[in-house]
Amino acid sequence: MTNSVTSRNIDPEKATAERLNGYAAILGCIALIGAYTSTGQIIPGFV
Image (cartoon, rainbow, N blue to C red; front, side):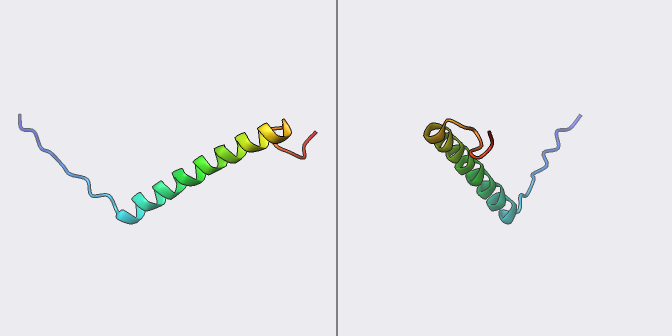
């Protein structure tokens, strides 16, 4: 039985896109927390 190690090459563009997507998600969470603390509503304008 032999161990074959396969290396995966990840596109730099894909890594950058995933990092940017993560930054956008974090920014959205921060905006959600800011809106909730300032207005008391999760989605301001509803109810």
